[in-house]
Every structure is written in C-alpha cells, then in structure tokens.
Length: 397
Image 1 (cartoon, rainbow, N blue to C red):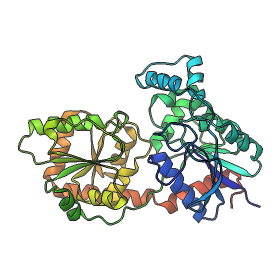
Image 2 (cartoon, helix red, strand yellow):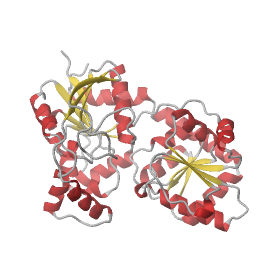
Image 3 (cartoon, rainbow, N blue to C red):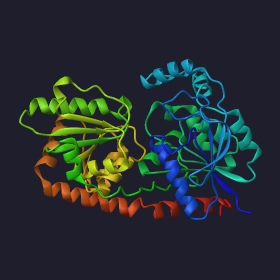
Image 4 (cartoon, helix red, strand yellow):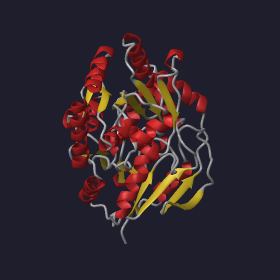
C-alpha cells in the first residue's frame, strides 16, 4: 500500500492569510490531483496572528477533502518569545542559550511529535515553512522521511543554528527560485543531492474588470497597487513614504496608491485623498485591481517567491520591486516583466517611465505573463515534486 504524504504546518484552514499557508493548501491539492494520498498534520492554533493556543478541538476532521489531524499546543512563554523576537528583528544577536529559549517558546505540540515518531513507517512528511517550532523540532524526529519546503528568505530567523540544523538533516529541501536555494547553500553548504529547485504553482486570477473597480472606488486616475500584508517587515511604510515624497515633489501628478491586504500602515493626513486602503478583499476584487493598476509595487525585501507578482503579470500588469530583494529582482531580470529601484530617486524614475509609456507597460506585462506560464504552472511544479519523490524512493501513489 502506498505511503501517505503529510504536510506538517503550524496552523491550517482556508481563511488563513499568508503565503506559506496558501502554498501548503494549493500544493496539497495539486499533488492529490496527481494520485497521491495527502493528509494535513497541524496544531489546534488558529493562525499566525492569533495567540498560539488551542482554538480548534484536537482530533481528526475532513476539510476540503483532506484528512486534517490537529494536536494540542504545548504550553509556552509568549512574552519570552516576543522579547527575543524583538531583539532579532532589531538586528541583535542571541546567545546560544537565548536561541534555545527562542525556539523552545515557538509553537510546538508534544502530541504532534509523538504522532510523527509513532507513524513514521507509513508517512513521508513535508514541513512548511521553516521558521516555526513545528519545523525546527518536528523535522528532526524522522529526518530520513522528511522533506522541507522552507519558504526561506533573508531574515534573522534564517541565520539561527536550528535552521541550519534542519536544512542539513532532512532528506530533501525544495526551493521556489535559485536565489532561495543559494541562500540555503550559504547557510548549510551546497548539496546538489538534497537541494532541489521545484518552483511554486500559480493559479491564474479570474478575468479582471478594471472599469468596474474604478467606478466602485471612484478612482479615475492612474494608480500603483500594493497587495499583501501591510507591515514593516513587508516594507509597506517605505512605499507610503516614497509615494508621499513623490506627491510632494510632483504636485501636478494625479497618481494614486491603492493598498490591499490585512494589517495597517500610517497614512499622512495630506494623502487621505490619494491613498485608498481597501483591507482584505475577495479574489475577484483583487483581480479587478490588478487589471486596472499602472503597476504592482512589491517593496518587500523578505520574499521567497512573491505570488502577487505572478498574479499581476497574469492579469496584464507590470511589476515594480525593491532592488535589494534578490528574489523579486531576479524575477524582473529573468522575465523583463518589471523595473526595480534601490532608493527614492530610482523609484521616481521607474514610476515616471511606467506612467509615461503605455507600450512599455504592455511589453513588460506580456513578458511577465510568458515567464509565469513557462515556469510556474501547477503541471510543471507538480512534475518537479514528483521527480523529487521518485529520486528519494518514496512510495507515494
């Protein structure tokens, strides 16, 4: 009887925001469609943004056609974790003992770990993402049966010794883009036998209605679009700052900024008529915004793939990204589907070029669309995963 592939993720559910969580659900569906038996192993916590305590009952449910097994969260000291996380995010170093504390106070489940150990003979485990206790500790329980989908990017958590330990221990690690694999090799050393480039599948957005979007929100001017979590780690405040400076130095410009996604960012009062924060919107509304935008602006430095760039290209919109994020910059260079900036003055040059040249926007959007279709369809990405499993000798389906 074939083994089962179990995705091990800190929390699970259709309404949970976050790139890794969405990727877990979509990849599980794609592999199930190719005949693999797939389950979800997770904790009883609700999501990343809620307290990491038991929200769901433990036990087995069926959700979206998957068997989902939830396990109780291990008691933790959230204040200790928050203090150490704050230190890390400010660029501070942790001692070896503090790092152990930080990992110990992440999200864990002793019942989950006991299940992983007891059932290792009938599962292969896929851990996603790398930066939580369920992966840092869980992937070491049966490393010979474990595959890591790290969603790795340059952030303080990547440099922890626990991250290097997991990268070196698992049977295989699967990466979205070459820059992500290169980062893993810089941390754990090159390993062509275990480090595989598989990509990430992209579901095309529904056809957009730009006129309907503009009419609903009374936006009749060109606009830049940001889609994602509005948070400092996503560089959203920098985007708002650059846009504010642009409007100050270009008073005749009619350009607007539209923000979509959870979270919040401070918007100066003088920009109240120029910045529209829509919060979380349904997929069709997002597709309509993509179709109507001058460009998608993705300022984040912390990306392992950037699904919103792919969606924007498929919707016919070019990209504008931060040049210090190698992942998004490499996408633009490989596709010729967007521009990048390293500072405010380059941001202005890029915005002016895009605003003033409709043919340039169309060429970039078409090039980006071709790039996504050539590299990141679900058929191609699923083939890559299946090739990895065959190489490992995993008896999955």
